[in-house]
Amino acid sequence: MIVVLAGGVGAARFLQGLVQVVPPAEVTVVVNTADDVEVHGLHVSPDVDTVLYHLAGLADEARGWGIRDDTFGALELLGRYGQETWFQLGDRDLATHVYRTLLLRKLSLSAATDRLRQGLGIASRVLPMTDSRVQTYVQTPAGWLPFQEYFVKRHAADDVLGVQFRGAEVAVAARGVCEALAAADGVILAPSNPVVSIGPILALEEIHAALRETRAPRVAISPIVGGATIKGPADRMLRGLGREVSAVGVAEGYHGLIDAFVLDTVDAALAPRVEALGIHAVVTDTIMRGPAEKAALARAALAALRPAPAP
Amino acid sequence: MIVVLAGGVGAARFLQGLVQVVPPAEVTVVVNTADDVEVHGLHVSPDVDTVLYHLAGLADEARGWGIRDDTFGALELLGRYGQETWFQLGDRDLATHVYRTLLLRKLSLSAATDRLRQGLGIASRVLPMTDSRVQTYVQTPAGWLPFQEYFVKRHAADDVLGVQFRGAEVAVAARGVCEALAAADGVILAPSNPVVSIGPILALEEIHAALRETRAPRVAISPIVGGATIKGPADRMLRGLGREVSAVGVAEGYHGLIDAFVLDTVDAALAPRVEALGIHAVVTDTIMRGPAEKAALARAALAALRPAPAP
Image (cartoon, rainbow over the protein chains, first blue to last red):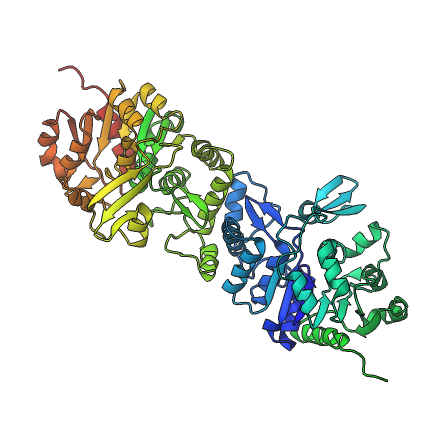
């Protein structure tokens, strides 16, 4: 079993590659839920949905969120009712949130997620990191903002001065997460935002400990290429938090938690600095333009999990 | 102020006529809520919505429910999740139910309905008959069925042996309903199903008393023309309940509650039997093919509310 710690779109694209080269049923995805948000009274789990939609082949991959060819009739009427519409919800996407919210009356978030997974015909296991409430807040010159307000409403345009995962100190991992990490054949930290996607998962002490202590080999993939992110504000967040904006900066943040680190060929010169952290550096193309590149990156990550042949 | 007791599509079409001939702000609509239903965890008020959508000019008038040119993406995905989809909800329509359900966390149904009304720019007052839970059940050879199951899921195909408005005995009228009836200049019972649309409203003893005791003139419009309904199962329901399937049968049911009764020209021969009940019979064309016929019927109803000139 391969366990992947995942945020949103970067992880989802990587997972599309992984399930090409590993039987999907042998993949367990642990997904960030700290940017979950209630919209119009509905429980939205953006990263979970991005993972589900990509694995189901429904994702609008060009846009990076929501469902392909979705319509926006409901949002239009919600706007007419005076509701804020900056959090764009397509009609099909809305069905997911309606159904999840219904399920959450009686089920945990992880059990509800499993129902969605089944409905979409996804063979991989998808686990929210926690059934507890953890909420990312971003400190900006405008004050502490809930993550979606910073990210969607204000277009991630504010300088980031700090990040909090409120509730993480008391949250417990969802059932199965720590067990999966303990029993894994390999653990992959997806090329997601290390601060606000992988960060909240590792902020759960139970998960941090399980990752630290698993006997499985562990590899992370850098979402920073050539000093910038492919998508999203990870680079500016790292900078704002005083961390090095490079693959090395990412690797440093995972120190003690990973055995190997995949960085892009454009960052090949940084490999010795990663190795100096005691982390095996793997240099390869990490830009996932299409299915072939996704599969190749998955193969490289899997290869990095295998112990090097004895010299 | 004209107060209209209303069910769904028949009432909604009549109201479109009424607001052509009376200032919309001088109309108060009291709407049946006994066929409200929870669908996918959302509170759906079918008759309220039919009234709102028609008054807002959004209704799919050909179909008789929902919003014109609506899409059905959400329903499609809900079906994929294994949810029952016999209760068809368009995407824009879904927005109404999502927003209402959100509002109902803090507001009564009548206050929530008022928000919807405002959002849709409707000047007439729209009052659910009650903020309490009243539920129509229909007795059939297959047993007692919740109304929407009888009406939508089973296409109103079962014989009707009985009807119950569960909860009506303890429900109280929504704030403003009895006051509106007491202060009205005229009360109109719309051409709605007398059994399951107007029936539940009158099953609230407070409303029954307010209608009985108001000093305003009161008129009902027959939804039965030539022994059959224009739309819906009212005729078969009346038959099943052992009532006469005719305009007279409808008028008899309103005995003691109305001063005048509008019946179609095809039923002119029945007028003396209505008069024999002590109810002034008004014969006119009642089929509302388009805006002109709707306005004409509204004018006829308003005329029936005016005391006859002294001989």
